Image 1: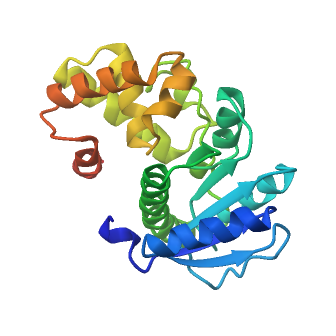
Image 2: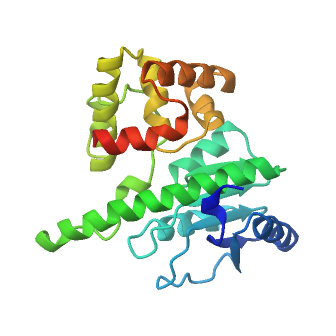
Length: 248
């Protein structure tokens, strides 16, 4: 199991008791410490969770409120949403609401490991960004307490870095990532599609979700990713965090 899963504290919220118990056991087997709660429980903002897993079996409406709360500076906890039923449209909508990843039942152990790892990494990135935002807030008393950067609009209809993709709806961080993609893309000769895939990879999304939004097969998204990694002289997608750190 990945090292970052060991002793990671995961907030587990579900409206399905049996599924919640099964997921809690799976998380424990991964080395995580699961804190299970009811859908309408108030989250203690004094506790630092490494990730949140929201499992919606019946009415997924409660997820919307929780996703918003979890994105606040006070909590800064990235989320994985697991749906009982859902196609590409349902997945895209959950990602729009701010989830870092979305899976549909049944979920295999490798999928859960990958997704929880991705969410933990996202939580770390958010908190690093929010730490910088607090410094900015000291100089700007009216700085918002909720950072829109975490509410990802998972719809790359325009090339990253274009006017449409960096308007007021995008966060400063997203705009910076878009600028990095454009700069690196020009230097390395990435195609427009490779730049789109790179943009969403830098935001931490999985190949299957990128593929559903771009309207291609997952193997096609992986094909573009392999090409762009080769052009960037990177060994794997996990080297992208280092690339981003160097370029920002």
